[in-house]
Image 1 (cartoon, rainbow, N blue to C red):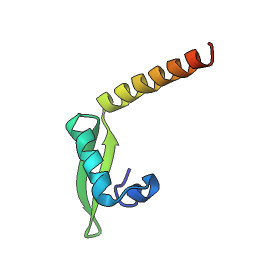
Image 2 (cartoon, one colour; image 1 turned 135 degrees about the horizontal axis):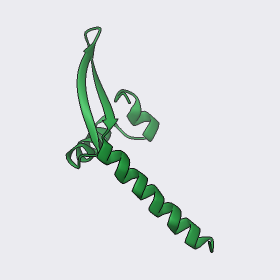
Image 3 (cartoon, helix red, strand yellow; image 1 turned 60 degrees about the horizontal axis):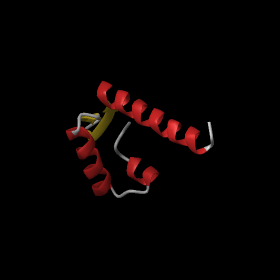
Image 4 (cartoon, rainbow, N blue to C red; image 1 turned 90 degrees about the vertical axis):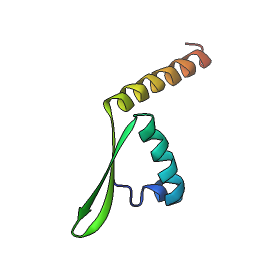
Length: 72
């Protein structure tokens, strides 16, 4: 994912998004890479293996909660 424009998609300012991303990076959930493309700076963000695994566990837990709430 490219940083530019991602904040707008999420309803966040660039500063607010940057703060959230820094927290996720510190936790080991994402990797941030800063590069230049045609002399323009770009910030690239990618989920780490730990981030993908922990997110999948989180989604599974939420699905279990929903299933219980629906009586299943």
